[in-house]
Image (tube, rainbow, N blue to C red):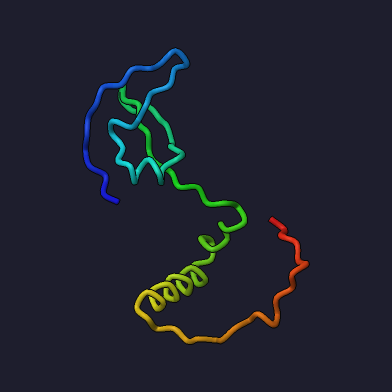
Length: 99
């Protein structure tokens, strides 16, 4: 997703909201829901932020695990996989989701 430099003028509505559709592509609007906001030298800056749930954040704190995960993703993308067969016999239908 390439971010291009683009300018537009927007006005706040009666609830002090500004619409970003003039400067964000459809893909950006679908992917960016949160922004870090700050002021710098008279400018108001919105920096897109992708949020990671706390439950999954551990992977970014463990460099070895992250490296292994990324290697596995690359291997899968390049077709280097080993079929382990079906795990259906281990499935339990009465297991509750703990999320």
